[in-house]
Length: 408
Picture 1 (spheres, helix red, strand yellow):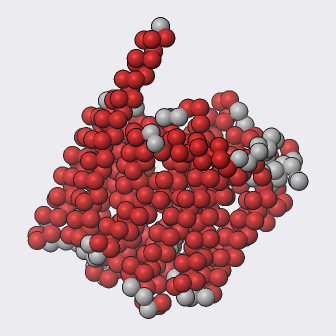
Picture 2 (cartoon, one colour):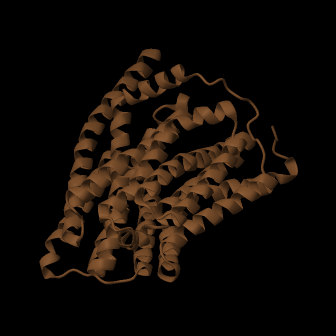
Picture 3 (cartoon, helix red, strand yellow):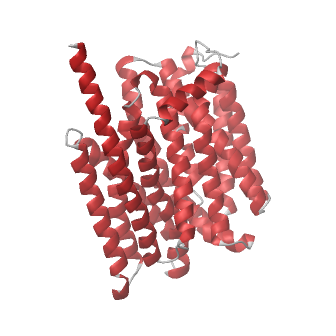
């Protein structure tokens, strides 16, 4: 086993931070290419959208158990193998333009991305502690949020100049570069290996999922992220086929969507001490109002400005709600914070992939009106889930208060 050299720690840390957004790049870089891929491969829009959904679902379900595997078998070798496989599968997608090959490769990529990202997050816990660790962890969300902003922007230009295959050549080359740098500068960061006990792991996850407020919280954040994914799946076809703009414009629209999500999260952080119920209800009312305007202004006329304008507000509110409930879920089980983190991250991808693909295809979203209908359906679901969540949350807080009184 090759341990991490002390003189390589600085550059290895930069590499670890740089690999965290790789999941976002792998998800979003080819969004502007979806219409071109569907045309070139002679498949429907829903068939090509499924490649994104399969990637997200496999990433999500993998994250649930990966933490325990990494704690038992280490980070470095698994990361190296995952980078190599991810690079290879990216080149395969570019070279073998077959939809079923793409499906298989994207599922494998989802698993490898989960190993890479979760392993690199764990790297910081292995190496740092105290205030320095807190400082690095505080950067995770910001660094991760950069990918949904930058990736479609880059992908739009790649599509416009070189075609859809260039996105996967880019991913393959980028991951190959990271692989070489990891082999030179990184090493095993885990100091204490843990025994792998599947039974106890499954019991821990089962106990968490049986906790109603936590499970409902997972459904809420997955649905909030699902609003973003619905737009990601449908906007390339609306912008490029209906409005007649280029893939570069799709990239810019996704950039604005990503910025709005980040802004919503920042606003939520600034209102941390305000009532959770008031914050969520206000955000939901704002979202519903915007979606109704998105739907009922269609007879007056739609264009790219109305589409993106309403979407910015809807996604900002979604990012606001996501940040609040995500924080609640992460802190719900303080004694099993690592497991809760893996389950929360994994469930977000799984729920959002299922809901977004389901609603996008249920309404066959190809216009601003149908996007609004899909959005309002998912927002109403979020509202119902929040009512149930808040009731269970009150029961949990009441039980905590009784325990505190009994102890005192």
